[in-house]
Image (cartoon, helix red, strand yellow):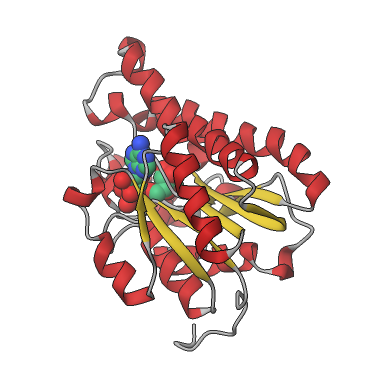
Length: 275
Ligand SMILES: NC(=O)c1ccc[n+]([C@@H]2O[C@H](COP(=O)([O-])OP(=O)(O)OC[C@H]3O[C@@H](n4cnc5c(N)ncnc54)[C@H](O)[C@@H]3O)[C@@H](O)[C@H]2O)c1
């Protein structure tokens, strides 16, 4: 992509959730939106102040940072009120938030800690509902806007190590459809991007991530999609070029989701079996 961009988002403003450090998908997305002329508030959970480097991104893109826990209605309302005050209204929202409590602590799916499970669903999926609700009720969300959330193919298929996060992503994608129907009245669209495994803090927190990454990379005809290409794809969804696309799970995975097995993998399995 050209460093200068194409002004695809000039005149648009929004809120970006989930940039923690340079490896975050939301970080690459923020840089791409900035390149395309969009303005935004960066937001993350208060704990990210200590764990991340959001301020550096804020400086680079000239963006305000508002700390907000995406499971807190109060925090979200304050965030969207501030975004409205800063920009007059919000044309786009990027939800790039995920946390698998049981996954992180290696609790097997058959023996989930239910308090953690609730928390996983609340942070990774229900937060999207809360975000849209708050963006609407504060009056911040403009007609004709676009909302994008990040998902993974574990919503549709079993990736054994993805565990409870598969349930969270299934709920996230369902919320996108249910809310999308309601938002359509105002010309607002909402979609998920189902992204390839990507080396980020959340991604690497999954035991077996390297195996999932390599498998997808070998099977996908184009290989795994990286964070920069995910960011470019996000820009298209926030732009007017995709104004009739809503309520979709859009696979951004180099073709992985359409594959069964490849010649290369058959050869590798044969070799592993010594046949
Ligand atoms: N990395 C991958 O392989 C991959 C693949 C497909 C989809 N995704 C999805 O992409 C999104 C972004 O994850 P990432 O891989 O960039 O990792 P990341 O760790 O950089 O981002 C996750 C973000 O969620 C934020 N967060 C956690 N709890 C929060 C809360 N209560 N309130 C507000 N923010 C909170 C974290 O602070 C962090 O910024 C997630 O939805 C993830 O599931 C990731």
